[in-house]
Image 1 (cartoon, helix red, strand yellow):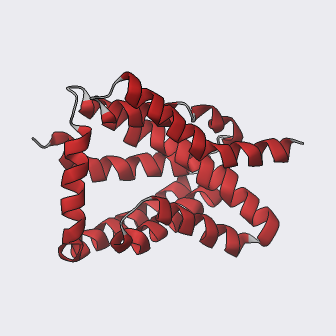
Image 2: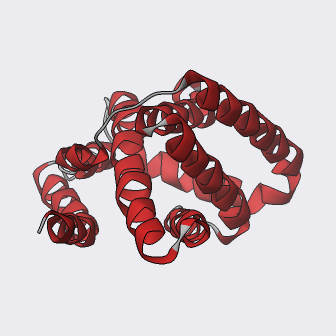
Length: 197
């Protein structure tokens, strides 16, 4: 019975997220960043399925080292990702429609998104895929879906690699390790945006 409740929760998470985002947009039409925060906030009860909240520092450190390499690779590839810069500017303009957008965006991206996405992609999706089809399918399947939902085609390989490392962090270091690593990654990516004009 419990497994079916978890599968239903996983299946309904995206529609619930979009409904919450829509309701928030109706209530605060000039604050897209608040809608984004609300969309993730309504999914925080899913964290229940991430238990136990294990943390193994050794594997977190290994995952962080791998992430550092990916950040370096992303910097090297930056000239090839110029099309992404224009999309990013449009995204920032859309988010910055209300005075508190930096607070909402930081709270969403660095706190809520890692909690919810790691629960959905690692604790729920990876676990189900691994149980039903094996560890390789679990790693590849959840990382591919993670990459696909993160947008720009040019970034799919990079987000796929991030998904693999986050899955490793989850599998070896525990859910708290993958949530922390995900939040740190988002913080590193967002610092220039949050500190910029």
